Length: 172
Image (cartoon, rainbow, N blue to C red; front, side, top):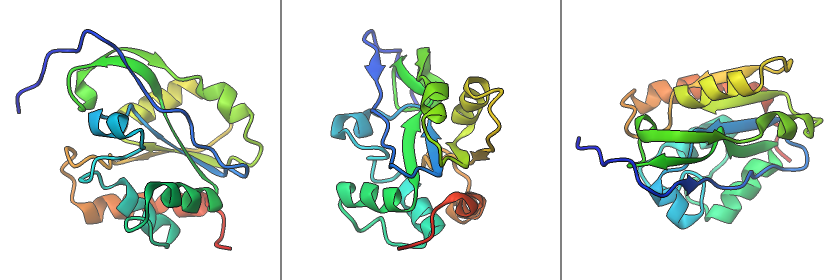
């Protein structure tokens, strides 16, 4: 795969999407080009995130419109954000991220009284969350990346992502 040189202009991530009763915060690294262009978390149609979360919450997500997906996650106590707030990036691959600015994760976490865990979508997210949230008494669950570029079979990803079930609100 040919990698593009780092862009000259930094890209800025998306704002956090956090329900009132957030029990689980799922952190990515930084949205890719397709997601940023659509202003949607995990907006690339080949990204496995929505299918993985569908398995975690046991409810349909993939077939829903984006606002409905967010509402369904919110009803189950799941919030979304990213470790990186902005960076220079030549492609959508995490390996191409340069000059990253970290999002203020600790202040957000401190404002979430129901938060029980942080799930990290990929290795870069996990490393960033562990640094940013060091000293917080909160489980950080490192997960295989939902990106199709991470070639672990979907079934293996889904099995690992089941660890998040313990931290979501029950249906209804």
